[in-house]
View 1 (cartoon, helix red, strand yellow):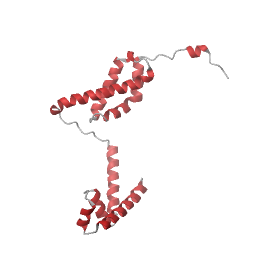
View 2: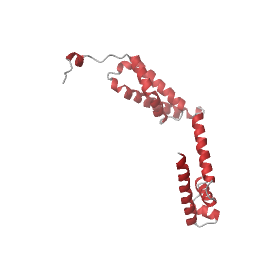
View 3: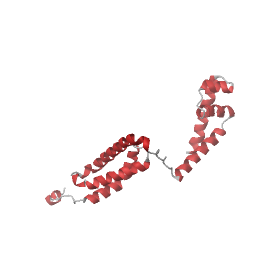
View 4: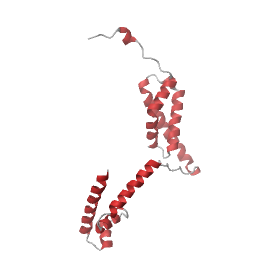
Length: 178
């Protein structure tokens, strides 16, 4: 077995500048940090702004990072604190600001959702009439079984049977498409 020379063991790791560290962290962590910030704030734009602010704070205080392996943790704590501050400020100014704009979904996501909805509607429409009636009343109008029975003039056991059969048929039909 070869032994490692003392020079190789004693040689310090190459120094990374603060700017390089921040850039490396941005590439590795920014998307995850925005996702994390979304758990704390309602608005995606605000989450992105807070993460950007966290990187600015990190760059300004990069001299404080003595252990490079802790830099991502330090950055996460900055984001969480900024989110808390943002929410605290929001509580004070809640009456004076317009509501946040709802996130726009991408065209791809919207097309996928619409296609999925079309598939579900087609599958429900393909069910036998009683199953379709029971499924629609139960899951789209959210009626309890007793009200469905009353509406359709069926017994509650009959409604339960139609619901069970309808759901199994939908599971088979929609499961095959996935």
